[in-house]
Structure formats: C-alpha cells, structure tokens
Length: 478
Ligand SMILES: Nc1nc2c(ncn2[C@@H]2O[C@H](COP(=O)(O)OP(=O)(O)OP(=O)(O)O)[C@@H](O)[C@H]2O)c(=O)[nH]1
Ligand SMILES: [Mg+2]
Image (cartoon, rainbow, N blue to C red; front, side):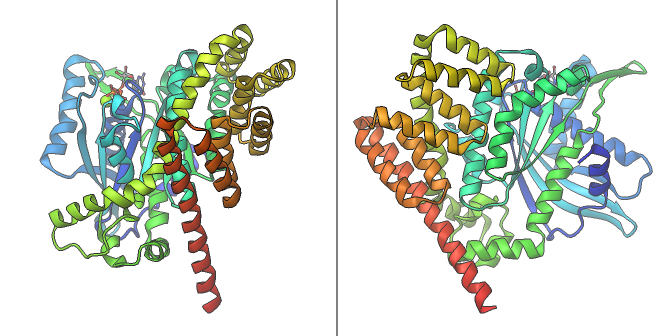
C-alpha cells in the first residue's frame, strides 16, 4: 500500500476501540539503529500535523508529567546542541494517549505504553526484554536502512534481529495469535533514492520477508526519514511519513481488538484457559500475556500484577520455551557450525559474499554446487538447508536434512530442525519421533533443553488442535 493510501486509510481511523484500551508496544533494534529518534520523531510529526487545520487530526498526548519531561528533555537536548539525542542508557517510559479531533470534539483513541530501551536489552536472553515481549500487543522492528545498503558487516547484526523476529513470529504463528509487526527501515533520508538502493535493500531483507510470509505474519514495511534540519537559526527534527508506522500499528490493533474481533480472541483464550474472560479483556497486558492470566478475578492493581507474576512462573515459561530454548539451542548449534565454516574456507567465503550482497539465489546455487562437489560435508549441507529455510523452501530444507541424516543419523541440528519443520507441517507424530532421537543423540548438557523444546512444540500443536476442534464443534452447534 502506498504511503498516500495508507494515510487516507489511517485518518478515518481509529474510533471504535474499546474504552481505555492500553496497548503495549515493543521495540526490537540494536544500539544506534534509531529507536529514540523514531519515537520522538513520530511524536513531533503528529504534533506538527495537528497544528495544521486538518479534519480527523491525530496526535499524541503524554500520559503524565514524567513522560512529558522525558520527551521535552530530548527535544531540549536537540535544541541546545544541534545534535541528535544521546544513546539511551536506561529504559525510559513513553506512555502516550493517541488523541483524535473529530467534528464531535476531542477523543482518546487508545493508550500506548512504549518503553524506549537501550539497544543491548534487545536480547532474548535478557529477562527484562522477555517480559516486555510477553506483555506486548504489537512490535516495531528497527532496521538501519543506511547500514543495510552500505555495510557488509551489518549482515551480522541483521542475523541477530532476524533470529529474534523469527522466534517471536514463530510463537505467534504456532499459537494462532494476532500480533502486528511494523518493520521500520530507519535513516532513509541518508539513502540515494534509486533502483539499485531499492534492489539491494529488497534482497537483503528477503530471508526475513520469506520467513514472515511462511508464518503468515501480519507485517508492513515502513521507511523512516528524520533528518535534523536548520531553519531560522534553530535545528529541529523534520520527520517525513514516520508516524505512519505507529498509526498502522493502531489500525491493526484496532482491527484485532475491536469488539467483534476481541470477543473472538477472548473466546479462543477462554477455551484454552477457562476463567473470567471479562477480567482479561480489561487488563492491559499483551496478547501473549493474556494467555497466562489468572482464572481468579483480580481485586486490586497490585493483586493483579502479582497473580500474573505467579503465573509467569509456570504457564508463561511453558509458552516462552519454544522461542527461547529454540534460540538457545540453535545458537549453540550455530556455534558448532561457525567453527567448521572456518574449515571450509575459501568457497564458503564466496557464498557469504553473495549472501551479504543479497544475492540469495546465487548463494543457494553456489552452495548446491559445493554440496555436489563435497557430498560428505555435513556442514555444507546444514548450511544449504538453513538457506532453504530462510528463503521459505521448507521442502528443500527437509530433503537436505534427510540427506544429512542418511549420512549421520545422530546429527543433532538436522534432527531438531526437521522435527520443528514436521511440526509446522502438522505431523506431530513425526516431530515427536525426531525429538526423541535428538534427545538421545544430544550430549548430557543439552538433553534437558531438547526435552523442553520438544514438549513445548508438541504441546502447542495439541493446544491448536483442541482450539480447532472446539471451533468446529461450535460452528456445528450454531
Ligand atoms: N539522518 C538520520 N539519522 C538518524 C535517523 N535516525 C537515527 N539517526 C542517527 O542514528 C543515531 C542513533 O539514533 P538513536 O535513536 O539514538 O538510536 P537508538 O536505537 O535509540 O540507540 P540506543 O539508544 O543506543 O539503543 C542518531 O544519533 C543519528 O545520528 C534518521 O532518520 N535520519
Ligand atoms: Mg535510544
């Protein structure tokens, strides 16, 4: 959808959100990607738009004095130093109300809770970050467009972000949740606008997009340009089309959480965890968190918080497991891969260059050739399978894992990855068998992780089955 079209859509929106709805939005992005600039830029942009005489105006209002101080502090810093804000040192709360001016007066569309976080917190191993993930309703994934275009080293950073997004969206997919993701390409004003730029960026994002499409993620890609501009002797942020990403998230959350959709979602949750669905609809925790709410109706705010925390000890970790254990495991196995990559030397170096240039088809073709020339090189095959997965070719990946297992029937990575692929194909029995084999093959230190991963993956599949069964029965009885 073009920016213009999106804007048209978004200005007639959103008005039918349940009263006092609070959305927790999550940021994923490394240090210096532009999270703070984006946040303050979006705020500034809507304030500026609001000052123009427009129908259907939308703007952010700080929820309390502390938030206002946080925003003002950044704007003042820019004003006084003529520079972008400094790096974020601790989590800063930006809780906004999204306001709307209509013919009938001023209305609050919804409340946002947005934490501006220092880049290094964005790590699945960080417990604060995990908590933010599980309290969130939607997410902005920040990618540095300038680095993406010009820096080969950025591919490493990107891999890290891809892993996080993949874990998150796989969880969303496996559990049938609605969770919008705005992919924000920052620093777009620094790029030359030409076909080569578009092509390089498109190619480098291809693995991520292929994955998002495979797991049917609800996402949109946005370009964010927030240059610092000097006008009349003052320097200010001049955002162009930046707030659209925010507004799109609201639009999507509105669709998901507007009364009919919300009832549908709560109905599903109700069947998973029987309890007081009304109490859930009022609480401000995220889609994922709502799955773990207490059955007991909370009486006070602190009571409610502690009951959620109690549950986090059990059900949240039950759910969390697939992503975290999966990532921990894959990074562990990934480490094994990278040491052997060094051994495979020159040839792989070329493949990596192709990958970095975003020429994924060529990278795959080279890997296929390498595999053909070195049929017993397991690492090459693993790498090929991984590339197939990244580009959404599940059949190719499975076939390659089969070839690996034919040569090395206890290859842990092939067993685990194939098990997950089987489960995604709804073959729980096949997945269970492979997990069993993986557990047997794993060194002692890894066995518990494999067991947990297997349990989470297979359980989540059973829950989805139950859910579908319940839905079919309900439709029949209707
Ligand atoms: N030209 C331009 N530069 C940008 C833009 N956004 C961010 N930058 C540059 O990127 C730097 C880092 O931006 P921040 O918003 O502070 O990055 P962050 O993600 O909040 O980083 P941490 O707080 O360290 O995690 C800024 O100081 C700017 O130099 C943009 O839209 N255009
Ligand atoms: Mg910051």
